[in-house]
Amino acid sequence: MEFSVLTVNPARAEADCIVVPVIRGSQLPPAAARLDDASERLIGQLIERGDFVGDLGTTQLVPFAPGLNTARLLLVGCGEQEKLDEARLRTALDAAMSALLRLPIEEAAIAFTDTELGPRGIDWKSRMIAEAARRAAYRFDECKSQRSEPASLRQLALLVSDPSEAERAEAGMRIGAAIGNGINVARRLGDLPGNICTPTYMAEQARAMGRGSGLTVTVHDEQALEEMGAGALLAVGRGSAEPSQLIVMEYRGADDPDEAPHVLIGKGISFDSGGISIKGGADMDEMKYDMGGAAGVFGTMSAVMEMKPKLNVVGIVASAENMPDGHAMRPGDILTTLRGLTVEVLNTDAEGRLALCDALAYADRYRPASVIDIATLTGACVIALGSHAIGMMSNEDTMAEQVTEAGVTAWDRAWRLPLWEEYQGQLDSAFADLANIGGRKAGAITAGCFLSRFVGEWPWAHLDVAGTAWNGKKGATGRPVGLLSQYLLDRAEHRFGE
Image (cartoon, rainbow, N blue to C red):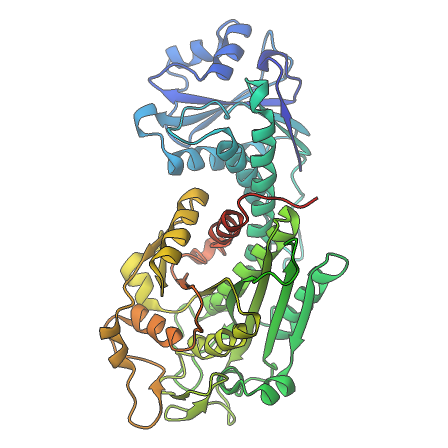
């Protein structure tokens, strides 16, 4: 699907369908009002008769449009104006795109950019429109014998009333399309089953992304991991026939190729049985999503390559499969990590932090400007925050504020949890430098405390996406690609390459 910006009178816009926002109990937005006037008040009459009232997320197709250069209108409810916020606008856009992509049309236009939304400008609204269109187009059926036909929509035009705002709309649209594509990259990797999306497969995907793109990819196999001393990551995969991998993707977009990069680290456990501390059978199939952090890194790197911000970014994926066999790590084992610290394994199902701790130590070689790790790390975070907010911890207030602000802008929000020194004692071990779990209390926080022991002298944030990376049978969500992409854009101050 291609995007464009039209600054013509919406009544003159040529399209197979025009998407029109309707605010319940309020006047139509300016572009929608122009369409109404030119169509002999077709929209207004439908509203007055009660045929369409504009409840949030509702849609109605009008298969004729007298006086307009379109064959049909798609009315989309935005709810009441006083309640319309970012979340509700995204709900309306999701409904609009879902309905639009079901129509047998090739060209459409959308009149949402002048919908009143507090401080959000046309660039933000254009971005959300493009992102919603990309997300709505996602289908995962590559493992089925019968695949669905792709949507026929090929062109979506954003109707912009003020020509002076066209450039901002185009910039927002470009960002939204790139982030939407990145979200879908992450969703696909997450939805793939564990017998396909193995650590080796992830390494192959990274290499494929790097071909001809300017992305430098390095894959450290088990021999290389042994030589560098990554004993924790190696231990996680010892029980699996699938070899562990440390995958590194480097994007150099800054004017100075040696400028300190921002490093993203993803937990890439391709399937998590729990190991010797094996999980129960209920919903174990969903443990293919335990590489949601890695999927987020892949998706963000995809968005970065499309947006080309002027900064350096390194994506690191610590990938392994956690399975039980005669070679698997055991409760009571003591591991030597890449940082040199020793870890007593009290629970083999707390393996994600073991994979991440070596990746965090590996990041030191870049002397990074900042580090963010992303992981489906703890059920405790799901209990604490549910499926809406990403759990976030940080070693710096400024870093935490930057991540939080990026999440609000992208509407991919995170909530900060404390990383106080008082929690660190729960990780004490009588036999090693620290244990890999800290007991039942504050499980999400003690997992963050564990990771903090392996962070260098860099601004760092930890994102626990256990509650947000997937949504049961609905599949992977692609979060937190939006947050991470916005964080990087903020660091680049919206500077773009050629």
